[in-house]
Amino acid sequence: MKQRHIAHYIILLLVSLIIVFPLYLMFVMAFKDSKEILGSRYLLPSLSPTFDNFIRIFQAASFGIYLVNTIIVVTGILVLQLVMIIPAAYVFARFPSRISGFLFILYVIQIMLPLEALIIPNYRIMNAFGLINTRVAMILPFVGSGYCAFLLRQAFKQIPRSLEDAAVIDGCGHFGLLRNVFIPLSKPTITVFSMISVATHWNDYLWPLIITDSNIVRTLTIGLGMFVQHESGADWGMLMAATVFITLPIILLFLILQHTFLESFLTSGIKG
Image (tube, rainbow, N blue to C red; front, side, top):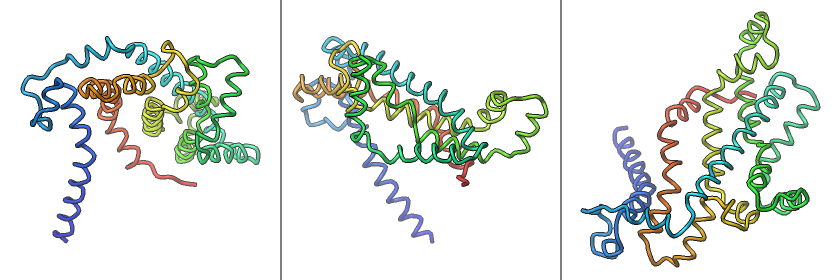
């Protein structure tokens, strides 16, 4: 048994090193100049780290504008998803009927549809409403999240009826139940979905690339792609600095909320 545990730990260590090494290399190269990156010690941290690469990327591209656009888009998507899906999940969990069951199946089917299959219909709808090259066009197609509906419906179904009945006796209506019972008891699930939603749309590349054509509304991933093409891979320090600037917020978000993330998986099962 001990040998088996040791083998498991060795495998986990090797997999962790494979995953962490690119991140390590990215951070190390971001604080080096070109001579150090092309030198013999490129794998080791710099003895004289510099922030020049970060200063230069802001001079070379509009990363400040890209960051603001990304925050607006990601926040807008998440807020609208929660505002729309939380009441829908409450209905799916507590008011089963043929209509609600059919609508829930449609939400689940949406999970199985790849984004590429919806690009042309979404683009035609945005074009019909004159929303091309706007932040709104990057937000609207993702508001009705089937994944969010599924997670919250399962979380709401696990809440005991006795708590709901007690709240009703105290005078809570439907919105009072959501505010005082369902949402507080489902915070781990809501937090996990929020992290997944933010990470997914923070890194989204294809839809913003198609729907935007000016720097005023472009997001970080599009800005990085254009920056890479502009640099042609010549200045690795700047490229790694730009990549660190884009990925660091998501890494920090996970590190801050990792306890809640793990708690959701440890304390909540899925019941039909």
